[in-house]
Length: 294
Length: 245
Figure (cartoon, rainbow over the protein chains, first blue to last red):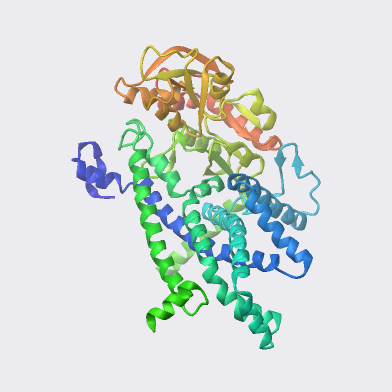
């Protein structure tokens, strides 16, 4: 990075450190911070969408839809994350390739399952075998977002399901008395009021999601914990210009600070959001807010 | 001037397309990236090591377009058989158990010794606590012995366990341990006898991928015959390393 970095072992400690912290490998570490932030930023709304869909389905009056919603919540919540991540992603990937294989290579004669092997024609590969590495990475990233969204969506669905039931019955009865249809009651009365009951549960999920990113490496996405472990590990002089002992403690300490700052910012933002959602609500906190203004 | 640039660009483009046609398939090479000198991440953040250099040379000889992919050791075989990449070059010893699930080319590193490294001379490797990486032949060997096995996901953690006293010794391929012992300044040392394990290191492939296996086998044979493989082994593993005759 800097011009004086050509012979690191001759440098004083501070200059050495500036060189060390700007190696290509460290750049990958800094990049992975953005990857993680991007993943969380995309996953959170998608998971909320899954949760909203699951919760709406679970409280549906139409039994099959209700079973679907409740089944989704029960199954995904019950399966350990790591099992889900290992099994589901490989299965999903194979399902996509199987479908493409059926569509694109109808005259393929060999079986797809050959013992342990899963073999589809080259044209059905997802992404294509000759696609550049960034396409593979983006595909892996999208699979990661989808998997995270399904897992966290199930938890969010349960939270929202509870929140929908926590809205006082009197509110809904009033809406009905005004002649609103079921759909109108749902969108105009129930949904706007449920958030205040859902937020504590959702904020928990948000905090867990922030910390769940090391699962990403199972999906081939290199997150910050992977790089901290990799860079902090012992480096011997034969393979690097910057040999050092086991520095994982310092790297994990830096991660600790990063996560603490991140969760603190989240807490402040969530508190603000909570205050905003409480305004005008028929809850104790909403009542207190009203009195404080009056 | 402009037209020259345009023509050059056009020529480059068509050449690129011709290349792409000739090598319609990119061979994706899976490795771990945490096992120096076999494979590791260098200062520039790129994959480096004996297997990187060897793999690139093999691809040139077999006229293949290759691309490297990093994968956790734990899931390196499942991801191969499900087709996420096409080969494994990750210091993986050829064993009967693995051969049931995947295929190997002939070895590109001759059968090598595994050794015990400890933080003091008087460690009991017969009945002590021995660290090894999960799903390796070394872990299998310790599990069968009378010693207590503790497994770790990465090679780094197995050595760290010895440094912080969690394990009495680490058991691994000596060529991985060599540089660590050398750099530890006397803190770490070899103890006990070396143990010859496994049938050498080979490229792991899907059992259905016989064509690719043939190409890599031929390339390995050609490198063995002209002596470039031995030179590469000496370069990365030192002059004491076992060579092909």
